[in-house]
Image (cartoon, rainbow, N blue to C red):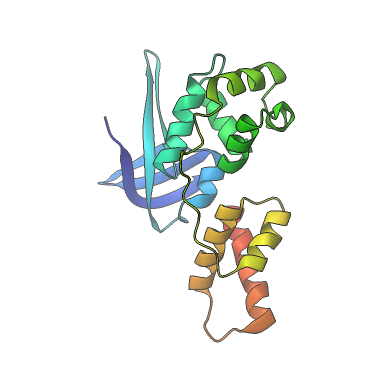
Length: 197
């Protein structure tokens, strides 16, 4: 029906993104991990979408990229996981950790995701092992802020999201700031972006 929506992001709420395009403001259910990766309110963004339609309800689900949408659709194929459950699972674990847990059959890691029990975790491994990992994964470009990425990773943030947040923070930082002060400002601003503030 439609592949993606591009427009001005107006609001980020818990598991919800609002975006205006063509005079229409869309209310889209988005995993918390994807919300962090999407631009801030007031900026232009693109959300890859999927429409859930039943007799009594309609809901648009959105993702930061097409691969994340594919993960969502694969999760829906697992017995006992519906759209809300898939959204919650994706919001509680990064893409890299999810792929790793499936490939290594790490039931304990999956059980650590809020709302995910042992039986469903085992079903996920049986249904999805080998399906989410790209055959030839592209290596992300090294971040010029390696130490700061590692610091954010140590605080529990996804490395890719941390690198993106640091890039955004750097573009907004005054060029007059250097050295230790620059690192402190970058780290502070990156945490704000990652927290969705």
